[in-house]
Length: 255
Length: 360
Ligand SMILES: Cc1ncc(C[n+]2csc(CCOP(=O)(O)OP(=O)(O)O)c2C)c(N)n1
Ligand code: SF4
Ligand SMILES: [Mg+2]
Image 1 (cartoon, protein in one colour):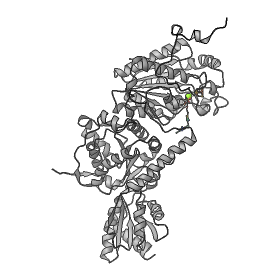
Image 2 (tube, chains in turn orange, green):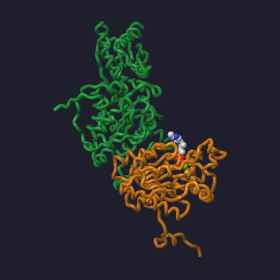
Image 3 (cartoon, protein in one colour):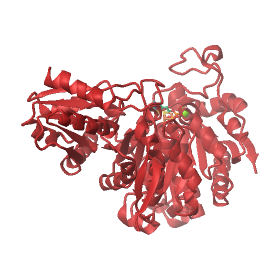
Image 4 (cartoon, protein in one colour):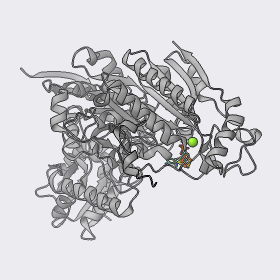
């Protein structure tokens, strides 16, 4: 007997639905990319906390530059690396609103290093989400400040040479040392369990903002399968084997 | 009752900001304008009007804090001097591209490089031609007294919000540091959140159910759509050229010769006009108050009955290009100015007119 799709799409069979805050716009991210998963988590968190009308997001320059197309809140699209300064301006003038920034590793830990460190050091009462995929995804896979030693990228085609290029930078460890941060954690989204943990971390970060505790900084160790030139499955395995030993998951600070 | 005070140009900027209902100031210290933030910090406006004052980690951060605040429909401003303004250029083009209003004060010092801390007018090109990348303009006001330093803060905010465009007050170290009497304006209350939502429906205030979400952005990946957006910007700049040109004339009616000078140089040229008139030379002064939009039409109109024009600027010759463009080749136009932090004397200006224009 042939199965009719109409017999399956019924309310009693519903096991999952997308957040009402996610727009219907198809995401531009490469299939398998971590960005889409983290965008979705943020939409879910805002919806579940019921704070949609009070949230202002700050998108970076990087693959997530168009993130404002996907979540139904007010947005600013910042210049490359400047999201923490833009977020500071918003939060200082609208202290009762929730402000979050979302940045890649080039954005947060190279060109925007000063803005990142000083926003955290002032303890700006905002949520900062940091997508560490070890590469410049948007511009075609160049070396990032986070690219691992020996890891190949288009501007280090024979692998990162620390003598020449310096060592990969652990921005999350740096901001954890600053008194302005109240919560600093490193998560991932490669498994269902990891997704749940990241979601919990982002919920906590927004709750900290509600309680005016200071800066919450959530790193998500991520894959860029296109830039890494791997399938999504291979990327996840490679990340576990190579990224996690250098960027271990877990809370660095939780006050 | 009139409230008259003796104050420095930089202090006047700070006082005027609080009085005109500014919501936020973000800045980074640099001579010769640090008194702006020092005055604000000493006045503690967060305890009175509620204005926020924050020292940023750099001018890059300051201008991006403005981008954040301006996007929320708030009246935000910064001040700096030449090297700091150079660092802000990326932020300024983003503000122009996102059509955000804000006020930026440049108390110019001599360049290039770290240069001097003495007054100069050598940031004219950067101010009036855009400064950062892309086809955009700032509204540029040039005060020539401490009174105008104060008055132009409010004017700059009004124009910035009218056109949704960044406005710059292009001053210099002389007016920033000089003390003069200033008549203070009464306090204007800051906008309430309801007023902001009504006046600036584009502002990111948190999305209520009643409206679509607001997005502050300057990115558009479709070139054709972006050309259309650029047309809109150009129309806006044209409207400014039609409606916002401001200037002051000094003894122009019967003039054979004309000085064109703004800010400090205009003050010096007033004295030069007096000296020359004493010698029987019929000379006048046109002082542009808006540098963009530039009083080109007025200069063209005056040039019909002039024998020559001297553009006087504390630079190697920047504004002179706009004077020449305005005049075409109808009359002789020359530049004079000391620069690199040196201020010309009225006598040097007289000499230059006699040698370069009358005798030349
Ligand atoms: C001032 C400036 N310099 C360089 C660029 C080009 N650029 C755009 S995105 C990017 C790197 C993005 O990498 P990352 O922040 O890691 O984000 P990802 O795409 O990996 O998520 C660069 C260098 C730019 N837009 N602006
Ligand atoms: S290039 Fe990399 S980071 Fe960008 S969308 Fe594709 S997979 Fe994601
Ligand atoms: Mg990256």
